[in-house]
Image: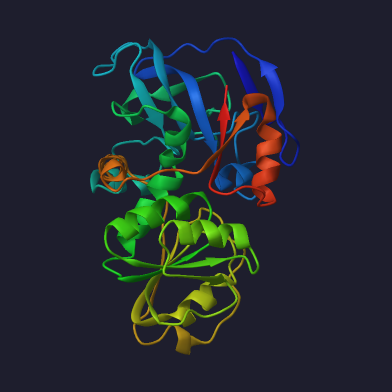
Length: 327
């Protein structure tokens, strides 16, 4: 198989021909049709997440078809189209798993971080964490749903019933979940890098009520805000933007340090929350909601061999929506 492999943190991925992997008991092999490029992949490659396994094949927004099945796997057949997300395996018995919080598992495995991911022609996955996609007709447009969509959905749920919702960082996750939020009847206030007119136009095209730079306050107080940009300085900015009792949800797996801020902008029962990973229940719920909400992703396809270019373009903000590798 072909794979783009990270051998050393901070270095470009290398295209390699590797032996075809063989699924063990409880596993499946997937022929990758598309794998979206997530900001978390940048955090892995740039060394912003601790102790990644190396060498590693990044990528965790995978859509493909089952082409080999290990012992003990039921409910999946050769040719079934499935999705694979960031959470690749859990222990199943720690207190978090036992209480329905598998996203906080004490002994997890993460796709493209602690086990090989989808920047490849084939990938091995835990069958129990493969998501059947019977209604998927376009793998390229579906791939971003496997993380940007799922994390966005968990963030939206944590924001509660907020009618006026601020979204800081209008990239892959934001452009998906804004569509769901509008379908639910919420008003979207989109915050972008100052002067990022393409992102602001995209937000307006998706129904945002207001767009502006992340350095300004909205014209109305927000009921809640979601921060997708990995910029700690946005936390006090968002706290200033939400009303009394409002929520600020941090949706990223990594963020730069949050600067010191006065207690008065947290006071009056404002809440600061973080989202960690996702659960399979999140995935099932979102994949039911997305077609009802008419979610359409904005994607820029790249060949598998262009993975380094896609990562660089993501780092530089040179496209709207999501980049997707197509083997």
